[in-house]
Image (cartoon, rainbow, N blue to C red):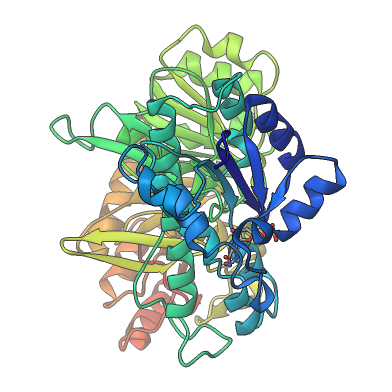
Length: 526
Ligand SMILES: NC(=O)c1ncn([C@@H]2O[C@H](COP(=O)(O)O)[C@@H](O)[C@H]2O)c1NC=O
């Protein structure tokens, strides 16, 4: 029987494995390794025994069977103290540390034109078996699945081969999280195809995604609700900027509602190519403006609805300037400011209101380049899953349906208001002029009431609706919405069209001399 325990190294991602192996030898381990890992270590003069020499069985079936042997699994799973006799009688040595990372299934299925055979061959079997065995026996065995842990494991080992109970437990939880995510990915891939076909046919039969806790929250939407913020598992996470990638540079801890509203503001500001400012309150944009001058963009957005902007969330799609930060801090109570980055000096400016949360999220993708993510909505006892609404409309997509043709300036404002309406809860009505909102009517159960509210808000803010354009996130079921728009002086309307009474709304627009365009795309948001 070996006096020193074994560490078994079998890794697909071989980064830093040589240094780690050398460190393990110094700590007092003998090393066991599978083919590819063994060869790499040998090439670097690391003393190591090949698993096949130890078990007496060659690796076979193109690597499908390498470590699946009682001498390996007995060495990992044997209960020290309880199973010593049986281990001795079968010449099974202790394997006290298992270092495994799995076949790259995620990378394989992400490749264009991946074949089903490639995917199947990249389903690791022996690796997860060892990972789960070691994690189960964490009372005695350490399991390392992430090269990022090599350093802390070597430090913890020092000159010995024992890890603390706490570290073994932590590594075991991480190992089960790793295999759960790995198997979830496989189930999603196979479960969204029928009969071994290459192309996905549908959403998977079971929906398996892993979210990692980013932070505990003080409470949820209300103080009597516990809450936490989870972000998508690293391997699935989009690389694009989002609330999940954002870094907080100053201010109080983010609340549940802050995170939800910041997401709404950031996703809305991403819709604009030009420099824009979006102010969100209770998940709805209450002021939006496009202006190269960031201070002007902020001031104009704010002036749409100063009352609602109080305690709002403000998002920019350009680096935050000192001047814009100062304009905000001097002007209003704000919960969160988020921008791709900040200029030098911004934090000195915002520090005067130290509770204000300042976040940077990294450069934003162009509107047409946004990653397609899935949207989830929990219902009691279930989950609704859909593709994110990233539908884009350009001037070329617009169908002019009235006698009056919109001018170029009106088309620009129609598209602006359409972009805002997409981020306003339905029924959504947005009045806009000169690339700024004039009034936003959100979340009403009848469309005409949203239109009335947009007009009331404009009046309240001292803004003129005469000559403004109007966006409606869905078609007008009756002509009353158009009549209402005419009453407040709306000059052009953008809406999806598609109602059985489109003729009536077109006739109403013609009667009032309003230009109207159809997008053919609806943007309900609940
Ligand atoms: N089949 C087995 O018994 C087996 N044992 C370990 N592996 C995997 O083989 C990989 C390492 O292989 P190599 O050292 O040959 O490069 C690791 O990702 C490990 O998880 C196996 N491969 C697949 O199941």
